[in-house]
Every structure is written in structure tokens, then in C-alpha cells.
Length: 213
Image (tube, rainbow, N blue to C red; front, side, top):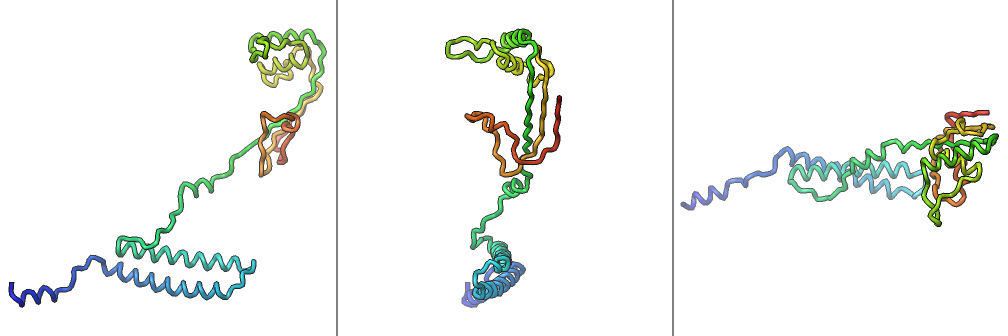
């Protein structure tokens, strides 16, 4: 290889790995960011921090953030590297936030019953207990059905709210309300000490109601 050949090799321009298109895009993004950063600084220095300036402050920050992201992307497109590790929005979290809140409906009811045949009621209660025994008490024996309320409890465990089917009982009056609670909503505590306070209707809108007498 001669000295002339060496000179020709040295005279050749270096190989271009970055494209001219991305070079121009980066230059433009840098220009816009510089101008926006200067305007952002001037706007913030002129503010006093009053509550009436909050909206303008958020607008200034949002405008700067958009150009910072654009500049960072332009650097990445040109060099394959990102100088700023910007946090990406979690799409799953955004979707969860956009979901409607969980729908809750509270059904509250009260039934007043009159015992007209205690023997028939007690017999039915004992039979229900035999078919669907509850857990044994500390003595290892079932609680005997000796009262109207115990008999109604045993029958209700088997039938549900069978107020119209209770032997020896007449329905004095009953009411049921379907309520859409207001938020914030505190759900019923199943293990609360005071059960009566827990079965009261929550604040909200009554969508449907039933009454019997």
C-alpha cells in the first residue's frame, strides 16, 4: 500500500450509522424543548403560588412533559438509547380506574309474626332441626326447640324466609326494601356484637319496596 492509498483512506468520510432523517428530527425536538423549557421557567417565576394559578401551573407542566417525552423518543430513534428513564403508564391500572365501581344492593326486611298455634309451630321446628341439625353446643347436644322463636329459627334455616308457610303462625305485617347505598359504603359486619344496628338500612336510594299486611 502506497502513501497515496493511505491518504485516500484517511480522506474518506466516516461511515454513517445514524440516519439523516432521525438527525433532523432530534434537532427539531431539541429546539422545541429548549424554547418550551425557557417559557416554562419564565411562567413559573412569574407565579406567586396562589390557588387561582393552579390550573395554569398544571397546563405549563403538561406542555413541558409532552415535549420532554418527544425529545426522549427522538434521541432513542436516533441513537437507540434513552437518556431519561420515563415512567410508562400502566395500561392495566388505567383500565381498572376506568371500570365502574362495584355495585352493591342492600336488601333489608322486617316481618312481624303472631303465634296462633304454638304446638304446631314447635312440632314443625323440631322436625326442621332433625332434618337440618345445627352444630352441637358445649354439652354435645342440640339446643331443644322449646320456644316459638327457636322453632321459627329452625324452620327458617330450612326454608329461608318462608314467613307465609310457618305452621301455627299468622303474618301481622312485613316489609322489604331494596337500597342502593351511598358511598362511602360500610358493609354489614356479620360478627358485630349489636346485630340490630347492622340490619338497619344504609343511607341510599330505595329502588323497590314490598309490604305485606
